[in-house]
Image (cartoon, rainbow, N blue to C red; front, side, top):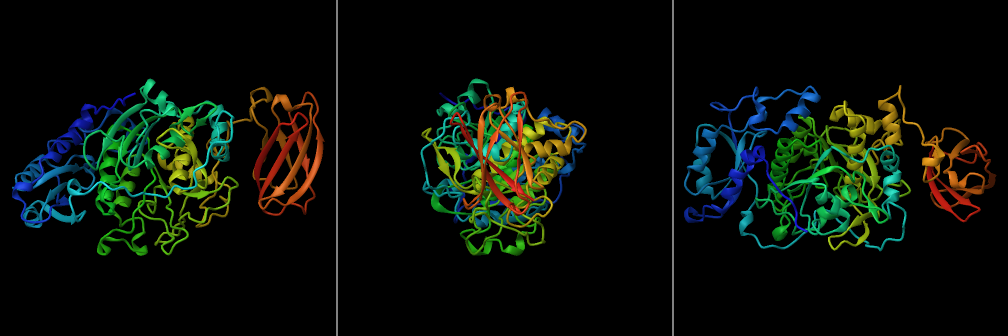
Length: 569
C-alpha cells in the first residue's frame, strides 16, 4: 500500500517554490563551506498580500480556526515580501530554501562570503547560522531524538490490546465510549521519520478513509517521510493506531499530517532542526490543523556556542519555543514532550517545552508514579513544567515492522496526551486552544497542589469534560454499556468509594483487595452484589488509607479479574 500524499494549492504557494530550489545548490559559486542560515527582514513593505484576504496564503480551515477563537489575522501571518525574497535569490551562490511568515525571512544555503552579501542588502535585519554543514552534504547515519527501550511482546487481548492501560489512565476509554475518537479533528505530527506507516495494518484505515491528509519533509524538501528514523512511527501509533483487539490509540479517528522536522542524518544536532520545527509549524498552520504533537526537544547542540543554557529556558528565547508560541497564538494546541533528561545533569525541560502556551507532558508509569527520566521544571522564569503527565514508562507502541511492543520516554507520553486532548476538544468545539489546555490541567490528579515533577498530575477526560460543562456533566454509562468496572469518585476523598459494575458481574460474589503502590495489602473483603443494582460501596477504616496511590484488585466468582487505580486525597 502506498501513501496518498498531496499538497493543496495554499501549501504549494507557501512551500513548494522553496522546495524546488533544494536541488539548486550554489556549488558552482561556493568559495567555502556551505551552510544554512536564517535571514530575517526588517519589514514587509511592498507586499502584495493583505490581512483582509487571508485565503491567498492560508487554507479556509486555518482562517476558520482563527475566526472560531476570535483571533485576528495579523501582519506576521503575511508571507515575506516577494521582492525581498527575489533580491536574496539573485545573489550568486545563494539558494533560498524556505520562506517564513512568522519570522519574516528566508532560510538560505550559501558560504560565508555570499552570506555577507546577503547581510548587506538594505532590508535585511539579521542572520543566524543554523548548521555547520549543509544538510545535503552530510552522510546518512541515524541518531535517536528520544530514547525508546525494553521491547516486549504484547500479552493482552482486550479491544485496546496492551494499549489499554495508557488509554484508561487518562479516561480515553471513556472518551471513546462517549463517541469522541477524533472525528473531524486535524493533527500534525512532528518527528524524524515514519517508516512502515504505509504498510502497518493498524494504520490501514488512515489510508482507506483518506485521513492521512499530507506528508511534508521540512529537512530535505518534498513529501517523502516513510524512511529514516522509526521514532515517528512509534509516536504516531500511540494516537492513530486502530486495530481492535490488537491496539487502539487515543485519537484513532482523527486526520493526520506527517511532518518530518528532525534531521537524524550525520549524527549532528544543530539549530537547523529548530528552524525546521518553525517551517513545520507554519505548514501546519497553513493547512488548518487543530493540534500539533511534537516529541522533540532542544538545548544541547554540537557547537557549544549555539547551545542553550538553563537561563534560556524562559519561554521567550529559543527559536523553537518562539515558533511554538506563535503556533499557539493562531489557535493551535501544541503538545510537546517534556524531555528525557530528568536523571542527568541537565534535568530540566528543553525547548520548545518551556513555552508558556504549550501543553508540556511528563512521564509516569502505569501506576501513576513519575518516571525518573522525565524532565522537570521549573522554567528559568519560575513557571511550573511539565503541565501534566501521562504514561511514558513502558508505553505500548508499534514498531515499523508492525510488531506491537513497549518503549519508554516522554516521546510517548506526549502523543498519548495529545490524543486525549483531540477528543476533549472534539467534545467541546467552542473552547479555544488555551481553554482546552487549562481544562486539561485542572483535571489533573494533583491540580490542587501542582509541582515541577508531574505538573498538575494525570489528567482525566471525564473530569475535564465536567469542569467544562458543569450544567451538563458526562454521566457514567449504564451497566449494559459498561465493559469494565469503574471506581468513583477518583480521587477518593474519604474512607469509602463505589464500584460501578458491568452487567455480567452483577449478582456475583466479588473479592475486593486494596494494596498500596508497593504491593502491600491494605484490606480484603468479600462483597455480594445484588441483582437490580449496578454498584457496590466499599468501606475502609478511616486510618487505613493515607494520601497516595492505591490499587483495587477485583476478582469475580466467575474468575474474571480487574485492577483499578485510584488516588486518596
